[in-house]
Image (cartoon, rainbow, N blue to C red; front, top):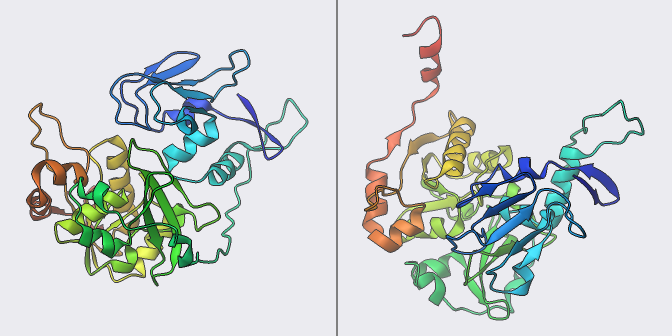
Length: 335
């Protein structure tokens, strides 16, 4: 499908982009994806994305029939990908331009986009940005995270948008970004014009020699509730920016505790690949005592259902990741 982004015409593979993510109860057809809403705790297929143009509605537009507010009842592909990728609207535009942009007048020649990595020098945010928010720990307390742990993390509450305010800081403690998470549903967004989450590791300013690494900030706070130092990637992807930040930190041993889903296993593999040889690594797996034979999705779900001891048990049962010598076993010299 062809889209105009920042004045450029892009042919975006909508289905290919959406297939990168896990969906609940998805039904794919030639012109539509129907699934449970990614914005709510929803188990019914009440959300759809158009994969083809339909009348006045272009491909990539979506609708959520059970949305809690008008802002998240419908939108375009950029807004949806921003949510799924844990990025701002502008960052997704940059991603799409880098992935699909090309300039040519010929119908016979298609040029792959030249990918240029440009690292902008962004200034830290002012802590005064948080002055309009107040202390209200009730939402995360209902999810097993004490007021003490929330104060340590600098958690606040935005009464106007009814969202928990979670600061992201640089390793030196300066404010780098802010995540706003609605207390109803799963909707979240980040501060515009801030350091991108892809360049940050949540909680690294509090990390110690042995630290748990997980996906979400609330999971990191859940591990802290159980007595561990914990950091978060902010999503199901890992890169050299994050690896370098951890390498320069106090961390000597990483306990990898990603979500129990396809994206979580992908993230676990990415962390292992990037951090092997840089720090000691262990794999911890979230409690899997569900009566239906399934497993809990993440650390916070385990904390709420089975308490802090279930997370401690996961660490006690964690397995060391074998180091570089493992590669020798696949060579002609090993067995």
